[in-house]
Image 1 (tube, rainbow, N blue to C red):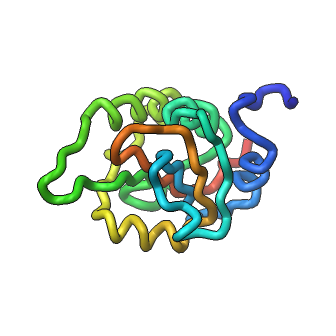
Image 2 (image 1 turned 90 degrees about the vertical axis):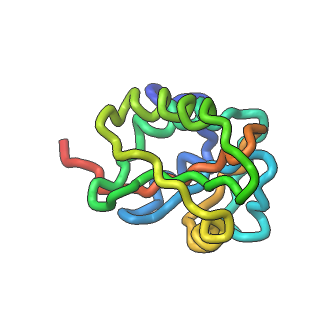
Length: 144
């Protein structure tokens, strides 16, 4: 165990976060997402909620300041609806470390899958919220 790093972050996830470069994307996927279908770099985080992982990851992870939307979630399929509490719950965790982050972009389902193919990694969580997937785009870590 390391000081200052949440125990929710596994060694595999910590390694991925450290190896990602500027512009790389990581998906925190709900339990229903077909992660293995779209990406070969899948990390298991079974039993963990995405809002908790966001709170653990974002103190270590700089969001991309050079894009309009460093965060993206899947849009509802036509005829379906979103539960607004999912995004608002994620935003609570995100705003702890990123108080001026841009609005979360909504991405059509199949476009989201295409982005998953090119993501650095997919983290399969225990999140059960419908449309609970979120993409984080890594930025440049400021020099201290």
